[in-house]
Length: 90
Image (cartoon, rainbow, N blue to C red; front, side):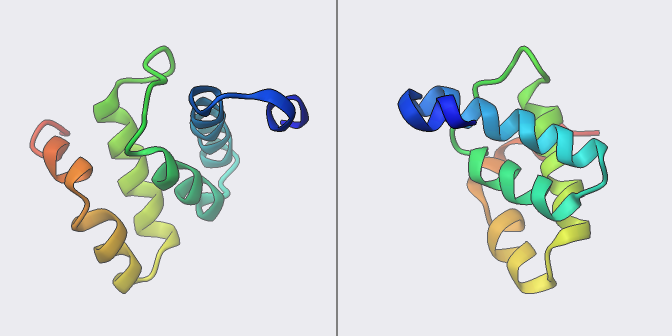
């Protein structure tokens, strides 16, 4: 993270958020995972880690646990990125 702050571009910063969110999700820190995932939804490029549909699924699941109802509706349910993929997610 320190090296990224010194000279990382936006793509690397967003990839770091996705990787950090995955780590937080596995270590059961759902609030941090939700925060990282939601900040990377619009610019997701980490297809080597998971598909965009699976990323949205993980974002929704961690946000259900971490966010209150008002923020969940505002940040997840009303998000055009999430709505565009929801019919494809099992």
